[in-house]
Image (cartoon, rainbow, N blue to C red; front, side, top):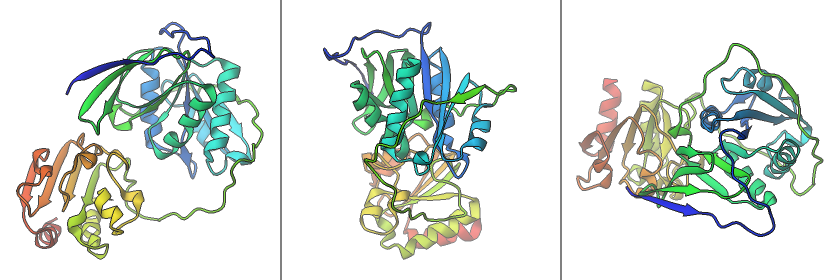
Length: 334
């Protein structure tokens, strides 16, 4: 690992300034679905609190009352801004980006923060473009109000970046920060600025896969399959094992691209970032793009018939065996 320091060049159209801990005010975009706060938002809140200033949470939705009540009791939240409108019912990124910008303009927040999830990555770059500032993505540490650490080159190098923008727009890697706890006193809440529907996008439909297994992003145990599974039907072996130990099931990009499973299960640089207590990689070779999404797992177990597979270089425990023999045997013993 090595560190890089990169300074963003200011544009001439905006006046630039610097934020110190004395005048930091962060706005946290709360991700939620089905009246439940996304686990990654709790990690992003911890990062926002680490800036040293106040943290205001922004909750948007068609009926977000129960989410607002829960967010107001999260440790570190000083105020909750509520945007209650049908325009936010389906988390369309254009609506949320406009809301973020108008809220920043009204209250003068120095930092806009969200989790580095599909939702955060969809909304914050749009907000950054509207504000004409640079986006700082996937941070893993905070060195100051304007200096952050983030992985580059699929995690093979670590960059320390300094932003000269007066407004910092940041997404946070959830696995790099602990989840925020709760506080005894609920923070006050008030209405967010009204933002009309721009009409640039429209919700058509949504198709969700329902499962009784834990969410992949927040599961403490994950079993993932790769190209070595050979077919989607063979993922049934992993589902059986996962049900025995209460694990979520994931996949490498190779398995997703081959059509074995849905892309919602993809783990890696272009998929989800996970850091469970236990990660079992089955039939996964260990390309650096996949390692970027799971190498922070506490214990890594690899099952692969190729003893030279790169996955064994990061595994705590390795089993060189045919997965079609090893996995059923392991499942029987669990």
